[in-house]
Image 1: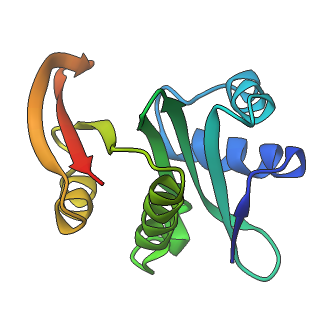
Image 2: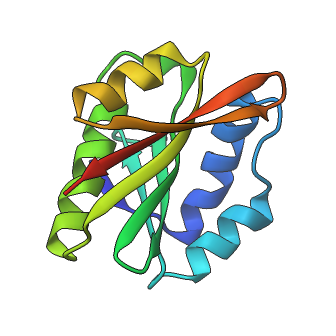
Length: 142
């Protein structure tokens, strides 16, 4: 089930974040994005007992910048990321946003494939944005 991020979810997403990234967002970064409820579209995917994935995105004028889609390691490959992304895109359309943009690590083949399946197009590159890896800039027109 997908719901808006609540303050009660912060601890669970911080735990998932820390296990997924070498340079994870801090608890305070998640709390700040939660507090700006009119500026962020933040969602969690819950199984029956706990958060197994989350999405963090920010509304910037008439577009939405997708910062994170993260699924716990044991729940990957179960379409959780796809469901979160689809939900966020539908919410963006309801809000009359014109596009979704993102950066993705050039080595993250699974994420790139997911974005391409949703129709995102490569629009640019940032050299060494993720340490030694480039970032691929992608956009989806709505």
